[in-house]
Length: 201
Image (cartoon, rainbow, N blue to C red):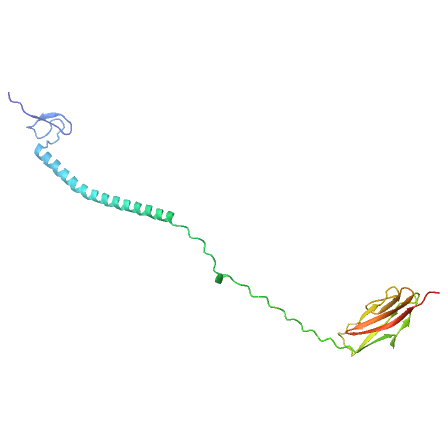
């Protein structure tokens, strides 16, 4: 008994006779096995041709990425292993030496005049010695040096301050009875004036 081969519709998946060019159920054109196989093979080859360039570019990109990662790792390792450089020590030439202070000029001392003589006076009259009572008012004396000089310094002192006292300005005060000397000095010259303070009575 002869049986007509059946084929399956690629759209509705129903079987129908291979003698028909279209599916009686959905009208889909039947594709011959030879052309299907050939087209499938052609499509596969075309897909393979398309896939090959993509695979090549993917490999190239992967290689570039891998090289970049390796370079980055090497750079990080070299930086971490690099010894720290010590801070530069300033060289002596870099230190700024302050200029030495300018010394102020020493004033030239004026020569002290050579004193030849001292004159002691009271109210313009020369005094060579005097008597002063305890009850008397203080006696103001003046001293004149020769030769006359503004820089001459006259010093007054009492040989016994229990008898008389004298200020730097030549003011003489009687303290107690007795005999002493009033000494007037200027430079290397000194003049002594005898002073008597009598007992009160």
